[in-house]
Image (tube, rainbow, N blue to C red):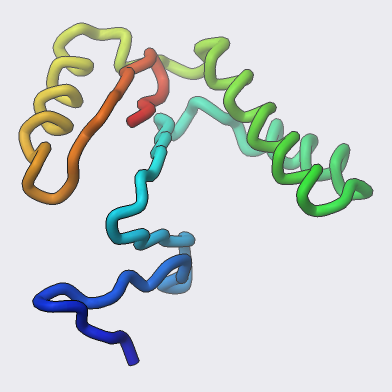
Length: 116
């Protein structure tokens, strides 16, 4: 059972709804990245998982994250956000609800992924 703090329920923390992990951190600053579907091919992920399977969990997670970021920065896939109109639409969505659901401190739109 979640506690209520004033009118707001206490954040759940990390949880899953059965398909993707979720993080509800309340007033905790969070860094979010999302990629286009073709920015990271499944065969590359499988290869990395095999290469890192003997590593300790913390090392494996850190290295996997590093590899994902480096790979995405190389601009793989069709890179639809290279199109100024598409990037502008993402920017409009990010800025459109700033202050309502969250406070956006910084953001960057890359050709195949977004950081905020």
